[in-house]
Length: 430
Image 1 (cartoon, rainbow, N blue to C red):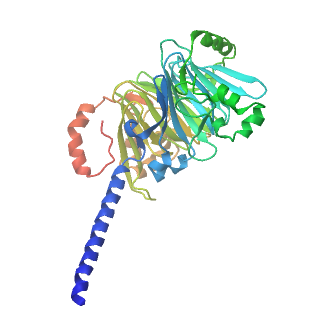
Image 2 (image 1 turned 180 degrees about the vertical axis):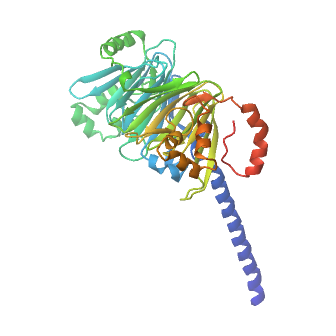
Image 3 (image 1 turned 180 degrees about the horizontal axis):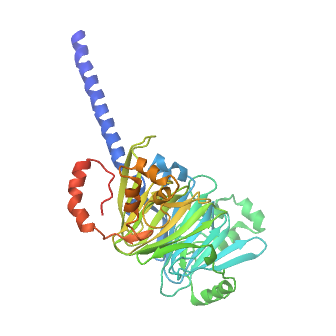
């Protein structure tokens, strides 16, 4: 009897060992996938909701599903809309507050309200510093036209769902791609509501004959001309007085805060080789979207997902349609490896400050040194004296955006030795 139990015991041990090894491998794979929880690659992070020959709608995966570190963004989603020239996005409402930023094209946005009220907005991306933006309240029916005969339309939306983290678009139309939500009611409800037989309702509203291919459709020039008349007469005035713009020959950044939504909207352009010096935001969690170009980004944050005084850098090579999240108080530096431009959304933007760690202007380290006892504090903070620290900081005469090519060749020669000596992440190497 004992002999029979021994093989069974061995099998049990082998099974547990195999299970343990499999679990360890799974944990390692999860850890590897979370090496940079702040980076969303365009190749596998966007989910396409709809696509046809005239355009597409897609949504970025949920931030909190990427990492627990981003759980404060669980109530925010990122949506991209693209359409070809002379097209219409059919009327819909969403269970989310929407903040639209135009990145290319000049669309006509129509908001439909009760009592035959409509608002027309002619938006544009023509401003080289800052594109137009528009809020759409949750549940508001709207439709969107790209009236241009040649240029594609691209819009980035920050969505704030009101029901749950998922976003739902409710389209009135019944197309080859989806059913109208009105079709989901029992027959007697539309019959009583429209005071008509269901056969007539179905023929007029839902019949397959005459259905559009999808929710993005082609529109003729006469319809565009009529909509343009209304839009031009209702066009908004410039909001430039609310803009905060900084910049120089290497790049520029324009920011605008929507206090009602507690959201910061930003547009940033950098020339190839430019460096946005290390800086951090005091309160805002910034979501950066790459519109065009490429950049290298380094973010410094706590090591691992725990409370600690150890830090490491999270690095990524960004390209078109990539997304990168910068948590509040995390220092970050951005190097343009080509001409590049970004759209940014800052969450918790009210009373937020941008603090620079290098450069001539808004440098918080030099602010310490200029205080009455500041140099003594700097001398205790760093290995050099306070005077030496201030002398080092004052060597950089530029602000915000500087020449990232400076010392690059020397840095590249010594980078391999530096990495060997440090044996860990954390050094900025350009």
